[in-house]
Image 1 (cartoon, rainbow, N blue to C red):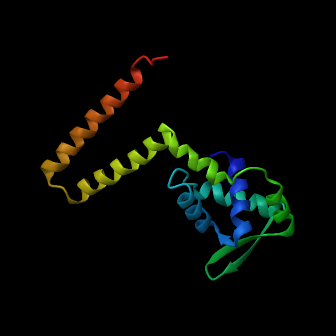
Image 2 (image 1 turned 90 degrees about the vertical axis):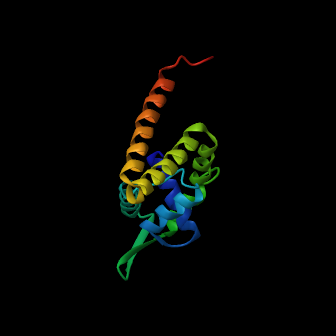
Length: 147
């Protein structure tokens, strides 16, 4: 996701209610059904930039920093046209790339389960399956595309 979309997403989330950074990451992941998983490395620098611009303010509550919009931030959020960035990102799940990402996460979860609970023989079989799968994927990518 582009940095401008992170900025717009943060502003749009904060229109709804004050949140802390990790909560924003969880909200964006949930609203895009896992298609967009923003990292702390994109959320926190953007929050700092928005705070420097006077669009958000923060306050310490317990061991967390909660962010909310200033009046200028609310004005900025209201000027944005179109659907919220997470709706734009969620539609990416309709495209093959978004579907591949989810399939990859599901395979990774199965591999981790095999590593944690499988016998030596099962782990070896899973390793062979993964090696074969990798070769097959590269074979597909090497094919001439039709069209």
